[in-house]
Image 1 (cartoon, helix red, strand yellow):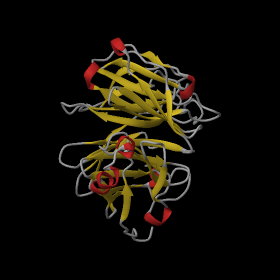
Image 2 (cartoon, helix red, strand yellow):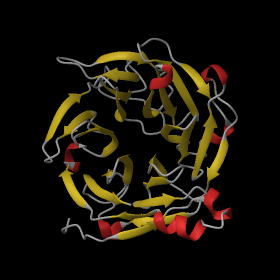
Image 3 (cartoon, rainbow, N blue to C red):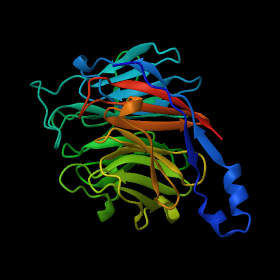
Length: 320
């Protein structure tokens, strides 16, 4: 790939509540955010199946990434050095019957507050589908999931000591105790359902609700957490995001940065659902899969799984 073209982009934050205020213009001007220079942190080996899929940020600026067909979890140091933590075995017979995709894949990754790293593996057969923990020597299956699921995104809901997992082909969000054990369906709201390929995909816990993207329907969905930790009725909060994969909040209310896989874009979604493309193919976007915001740092992975040959990890800066 040619050297990444650096460009500076300006984003006006949508502050819907301030729009009705007499001081709205001044308030908006004071909350302008700049997405600064974008640089490549690490490049991955597409020929070895290293299609970057997910991001878990670690203290100090390193990240953990799931690699889809390589069946790997890798750690990328702040200086860009890549180290393989896990390569998952093939199921007995060497094949796989993962729903829709067919092959065994590693997808979502998550990191607990105490530093434990977890990831999702799907094989469809062999009893390997579920939530796994990275451990010295060999990974450990913490939460088995049904063979007919396609677990995609993994988050840790620390307030309730549980995992939450999107099931893209089943159109569900699963929950399971953080200590391990049996999983149960937390929400199967119709807003999470697929329409031919992948439904619920990306996942975040934010301000009393669980948010999910729906790739087929191009939507962002908010599911309120009700008394006892259960799921309320889903609300569609943004549309027109066909092929959306992962997303994250910028730290400004419900403003979101969304990875649009099929189009290879990073898109800002305002609190009112308005959309604005921030990065595209000219900036090195190729099958954009995940975004993680930590303070002023924005990490973006390109899987190059639908188009392109350059999976990588990028880093940009939020400047407010």
